[in-house]
Image 1: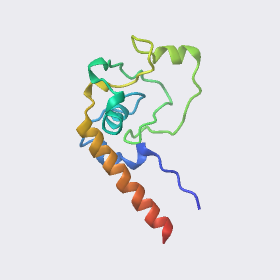
Image 2: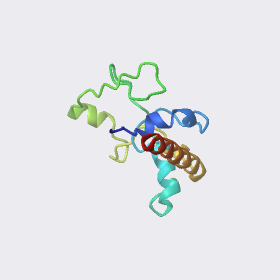
Image 3: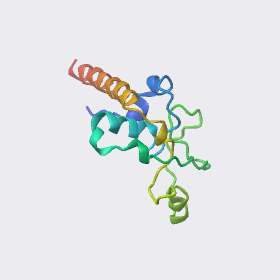
Length: 122
């Protein structure tokens, strides 16, 4: 039996309490997690935000009632629209990241993964 462990779905209960915005790429969720796990790789002084661009039929956040799990194929224009000022592919608010939020997020995910593994073992 196989199970899919998608962090976005497995963390729905905690991301609101941590004040995370919607899912993006290099957003405050991912940056906080990296700041906790690999602090030597993260310099939050360099974090630059880039707002999410609304797109029809593209709602990938499980907290969004419009979540469709529909990954609309990206065009070059779509990809350019998500580039931050530095050319990085950032969608979200990495400046709102913190190591403490990353620790809480990580511990929640590990706990949920343990639950899944224990269920599979039964």
